[in-house]
Every structure is written in structure tokens, then in C-alpha cells.
Image (cartoon, rainbow over all chains, first blue to last red; front, side, top):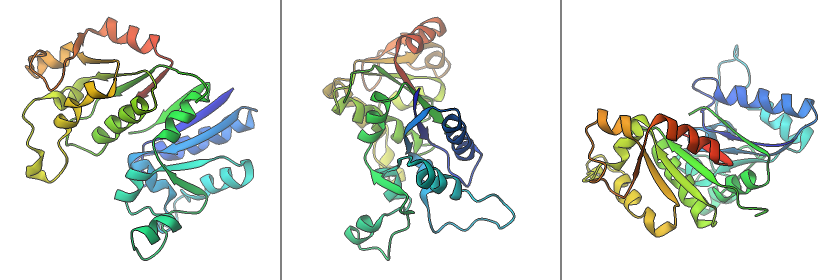
Length: 130
Length: 121
């Protein structure tokens, strides 16, 4: 089965984002496909390469980087949500004249069309958190 | 896009309590812009988004009511409102920012069941 995920929760609050990453690993380990993970609203904070979390807590970015590097999972941050939260890729940081990119390069910053494309091309779209 | 699945966007957020309210509308509008059949269902506190006469400039954010009022221009198939929540908030469903169809819990279940995709906010 082909899945796509929509992540609405911030990695800094609640456990929706963490559950989404665990779900992603689980469906891949069971032989399903993961077409795309789309991050919207506070979910876009998942892609931050500059967030500093307590050392005695689990790394909240690493599970997503692993999904991208080991399984080629496409990770997309909604551009309007991301910009508001200071999540910029290389291009965005130049265009908006900010000090530099803040989104990890494993993430693509793009529009909501990517969410609807994912829904159209997947058997299941699963939403996490809010 | 491969095919045209029907989408139901469920909105449960009050208009100015969090950024999710705006995110849910943006999601519905993007679907409509891509010619995807989309319906909106306002549940619980979400019904407050439909109140006329919102003055969001007082808190420096865009007016959700005005944005919702423009939905008929975007070919959004249908807009439904939780009749129970509308009654609790004493909303007159004929005097909201756009025409809505009141639905009871059984109709909500049917709506969710009949759609290919549901995105809940």
C-alpha cells in the first residue's frame, strides 16, 4: 500500500511528530511505500536544523534524516507555515535576506499542492497531531 | 494529478485561537485551486469561524471570516456546519459569512464515510 503522512504537531510540544516518524519506519519495515511526508503549521518546525533540545531527550530531527537518507522518503515543509516560523532553505534565506538557511537540507520547502499531490497518489493519507 | 479524489476538510479550531484555523482553510483553498472536489465541515469550536463581523485587525491578523466569505468563488463543493455546535453557540445558520448546510451527527458520519480523503484540523 502507498502511504503519505501529514504532520501538524511541533516536535517541541506533544508527541505527534515523534509518533509520525515511528509510524513511517513501521510501514516501511512492513514493505509498504511512503510517497511523501508533508509538514504543515507547527509541524514545519520538525525540519529545523538550528533547534537545540535537551541532551537527555531523544533527537527529534535524526529519525527524519534517517528516513530521507536510508529510504529516500520525500520530506516537504509547507512554505507559508515554514516562513512564518523562520524555517528557510538556502534559496529562501537568500530571497528574504536572512542570515542563512535554518531548514535541514533533507527537507524541501514547497507549497500545499504537494500535500494534495500526495493525497492523489497514495492509498492512505494519515494525519498526525494538531 | 492521477485522479480526482474527493476531500473533506474538517475544521475544529476557533478562528483566532491558533494558526491551525488558517492552515485548514489554506489546505481547502489549495485543493480547490487544483480542481480537486473539496468540502468543508465545521465542527465544535470551528463553527465560530463562520461568525459575521469579525474584527481581526484589532489583533493584527488576516480576517478569517472575509476569507471564508470568498469560498463560493473557489468552487468549494459544499460547506457543512455541526448543527449541535451552532445551537450551543447560538449561531443563526442563515446569518453566517457564507451559505452552510447544518448537519447532525449521523450526517457527519455519512460525510466522512463518503469521502476518499479526510484531513482533520
